[in-house]
Image (cartoon, rainbow, N blue to C red; front, side):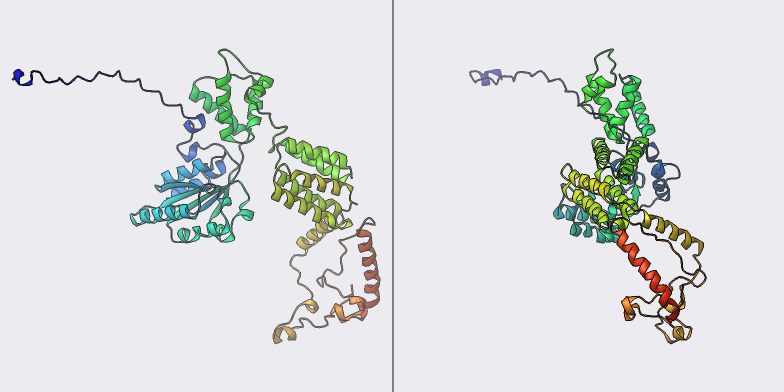
Length: 454
C-alpha cells in the first residue's frame, strides 16, 4: 500500500502553535462592582427604598406604575430602575434621550408590544428624559396608557418645568436626594471591604474626599479608585496631597449643610443692607463653591419681593429676568446676569411693607377663615341669589368720580382692616400718597355709597 504513494509529495504536518495565554479581563469599575442587588441595599434613598419606602411598597404589591425619578447625578436612579424590573419580573429596556430619536422609540415600543403579546411587560428606563422635545414626550402616552410599558424616566431637572403636563399626569414623580456625609461614608466603608484594604488617607483627607464627591455616590467610589491607584506601598495622603493627586478641589461648603445656609444668609443680608460690594462677594463665593445658579436666581427673586417690594417694582422684573437669562445662557455666561441682579437689588430702595402686609393678612385669613364676603360685592347670576340680596347696593367704581366708590369689601364681622402700610421711599412713596387720598375719599363718600362704609 505504501508503494502506491511512492514519489508523491507528502503533506507536511502544520507546525503546532503555542496557545496564547488568556488575557485577564479588565477589572470592572468599583461603582459597578458595588452596585446593590436589592432595593434594601440601596444607600441614601431610604425614603424610597427603605422598609416603609414608596418603592418597597410597590414591589411588595407586585405592580409598578410609571414614574419620574428626579434627582442629581450619582444618587442611584438607574440602579433602582434595574432593581425594580428584576424584582417585579419585568423586561428591562434602557435608552438615553441624548442618543435616541423617534425611530429608536418606535423600535423600543414595537419590541415592548411583542413582549406584551407573549405575556411579559417592559420597564422602559429613559435617562435624561427632559431632553426629549414635546412631540417625543407625547409619543410615550399611548404605550403608557395601554400598559405596553411601565415608563421610568430619570431627570436632573425640575419635571414641573421640563416635562409635558400630559406626561406628568400619567407618572408619579419621586425625588432622589443627594447623598449626605453619612451615606457617602457608608459607601467608602463598602469600598474598603470590597478591596480588603483601607483607603490610604488620613482623617482630614477622608473628610475632604467626602466633600469632593458633592453628594454623588458614583463620584465617591471613582475618587476612591483614583486614590488607590495613586498610592505607593505604605503611603498615606493628607488633605493637600489628596487634592494634588485627584486634581479636584473640595467644595468650599456642603450645599446641603450649614455652609450653604450661612452663605445664602450673608448674601441676603448684604442685599437687604444695600451693600452691592458685599453682595457680589457672597454671590461669587457661592458660584465658586459650586452652588446651583438657578437656586441663587430663585433667592434673588425672593429678595426682590421681600426686601424691595413696591419701593422699586422693577426689582422683581430684573431678578426674574436674570434667572431666565441664566436658564437661557447657562454657565458661565449667565452668571453675569445674576451678578447684575444682585447689584440692582442691593442698590434699590428698600421696603418690606408688602411682606409685612402679606403676613398680617395671612394671620387674619386664618383667624377669620369662616367668614363670607359681604353680599353686596357678590355676583347674582340667578333670581334666587338676587332675592337673597346678592349684589344689592354694589357701586361700580368706574361710574364713581375718580373711579373710586369708597365702599367696604371686608366681611361684615371684620370691618375694614389695615395691613399694607407703604414706606416713604422710592416708588412706594407715590403709592402711599394715593392710598392717603383714597382714605380721605372713603371717609367722604363711604356713607353715601350704596355699599357699607368702613
